[in-house]
Length: 325
Image 1 (cartoon, rainbow, N blue to C red):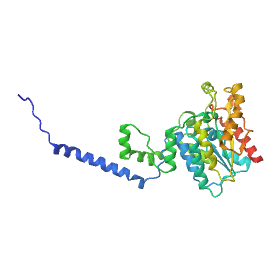
Image 2 (image 1 turned 30 degrees about the vertical axis):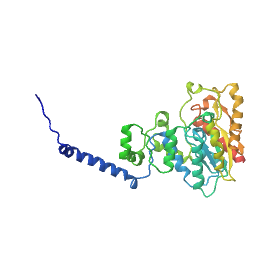
Image 3 (image 1 turned 180 degrees about the vertical axis):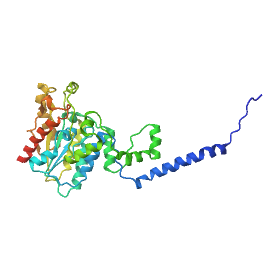
Image 4 (image 1 turned 90 degrees about the horizontal axis):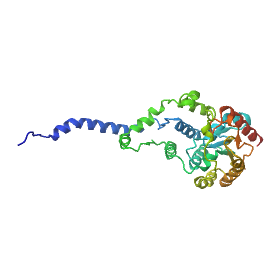
């Protein structure tokens, strides 16, 4: 004996869901066509991506600098290219980016700069921190993002099923081409100093690609391994980096300083050799030995970055060296 009987009408279901599905498909098609009408992708949502975008843009700008600084975040935060320019009498551009990238990306960025200039620089200064030299691999997300941005492509980092649906529908196009142009607040001390991502970018443009680290060194920064070496990946990309430079452009190598409170006697004696090995791997023309390999703890904002005050002192030392050249 049947207590209930149901009749399912497919036409009723299609009539109910059809308009909704049609609207979704039409919206997705419109979003996929959006790149034809929207600005270039620039989803600089945070500080790292704002820095990478700014340096990529700077590398494509014709400046015909005499000297190009390039390297990891210690190059970005420790050297004021505008100050060095005014003191040395030479036009200086800083293409230092974030430490999550690798030598291969540095080379691509430098090649982008060379191709944008009428006259190549007389010197390229590569500045990296000892921590960068021993890093075995880069951050995949950071590398993929800057590679996409250099090519003018939309980047999508989502890997979950729901994010994949959003990607196929084209949601990331709206995020990367419209919403990303809105200023985003920076966190903690960087927010107090710069405010928003656009303010950081404006500061970097005014200072020829340089930035500042407003933090203070913490006791945790003085902990960690003191075993430094040059990773296989950095060794592999060193020679190809040198090959990017024109014949008349010299490559100079500098190693960023470490806090004195972190460096023991053994490491103190190993740092000059580490710098020499790195220079030899790059087949560099000159090692900048007048920049110190260690500095007082009070001069550091973090283990890898100098304070704004020490940044000025350090930049003046490099300016005097370049003026002598």
